[in-house]
Structures are given as C-alpha cells and as structure tokens.
Length: 285
Image (cartoon, rainbow, N blue to C red; front, top):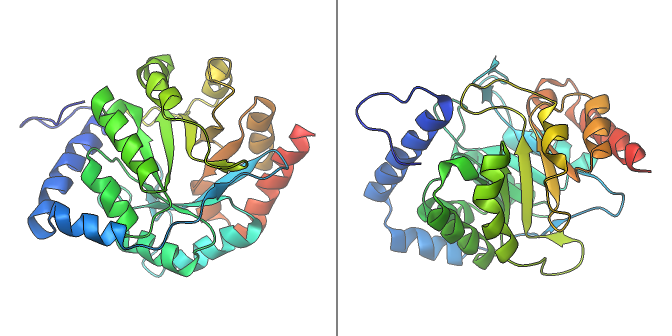
C-alpha cells in the first residue's frame, strides 16, 4: 500500500499506513539510519519467544487507548507494572503499542518494558511500513515486531521480515482475510523454521477486526482457520475478551491469543490473563 496523497484516506488502515510513512520521515530528520542501526546492534540479545508445552500461549498487550473504544488507561498508567502483571501470569510475550495518535502509544513505553522485564520478549505493535522502524524497535530493546501484511508490498514485507529475523527478533505477521494470506504466505513459508525447539521466530496472526472499518467479526477465526498452515504458530488477534473466547479459539487450532483491551480494563490483569490461559489450555486437553 502506498502513502496517501493530499486527500485524507477514507479507511483507518490506509490512514495509519500513510501516517507511518510520515513518522519515518520525521524520525530520520532527528536520527540517521546509521545511528539507529548502531543502537540496535549494541543491544543485548532479546529473549526468545518460547511456546509452552501446555498447548496455548498469550501475547498480553499494554495499550493506553483503543481507536474503536476510546481511552483504556489514564496518564498515570505504569506500563512496566501492567506488563509485569502479564509476565507473572505466564504471558509468552508482551505487546506494547507505540503508535502515538490513535493509540496514545510511545516507543519509550516499549523501551521501559523491555529493559525492566528482560526475560519475556516485548513486541513493538504499530503500523510499521519501513525497515527503519524494525531497527528502531530493536534499538528500544524489542524482542519482536508486528508486521501487518495489508500495509506492506511483498518486497518490503520480505525485507522487513528478513531483517527482523536477522536481528534475533520474532515477527507476528498479521492477516485479515484470504487475500492477505495469499499475499504473505509465500514469504512466511520461505523465511525458515524455528532456531530451536519450542522457540518461535514467525507467528501468523488473524485479526478478526477489519482494520479498514474497525468492525469485529469473531466468526472470522473459524472461517479462515482451515487455510492456515500447520507449520507456523497461529495467533487469534482482537475479539478475545473472556475465558470462553480463549477456549473457542484454542478449539479452532489457534496456538496463541493477542489480548489487549480486556486486560487493560481488568481490575486484576494478572488474574484475568491467568484465566484466559487456563481456559484455552483446558480446551486443548
């Protein structure tokens, strides 16, 4: 997808993609490619994403705001404390929003979470459109990045995925429909296998929220499940709010769920995350 012109993009995904290009241009005015590359190379290797033998895992998200639902946390949010609750519940990875306008995210949140909770990889969740942003993520200590297939032409997706793996991070490649899947699957399958048993390098995520309209259709998980390859761990994104939801996606063959809003709204995020994990793992028995 190319950047928007003078007219505002009509849909949310196009708007976020266009803003992503603007943010890269602005970042390069302050930090050169050489500087961000050097910072990334100087980082201590990130913790690998390890999958539990219990058959289901959680990517738990720190998110200040939802474009669809509004504010989820006030200015007093402690991202490290929130992420620490998730880690204590057994989350396999910590997703941290860094998009500033619609999600009120900040790359400083990612940097702080990665520094304070080094045993659990922190994933940069954003609308990434340029390899520069992968370097930025590693420079902030990220152990993974989200790559939204619909935002990226094939050559750029392949370049960003290769770079992610070269930097020792994992990639969550996100699709919405069979068109996205056809677009990215050859690249995903060509990228290789895990470095070691039980450690995932590439995940394939299905977002049941249409990022163009922001509408959620939980039935999309079932509709596309039989098209997903067995060789790549599968992630259910958006729409998982309750233990019953977690059990349902586990029953469909998903290996992980990415959950943000429900955990941000929970009075006790550690307990809520634990309940999601327990229900999904019971469904796998």
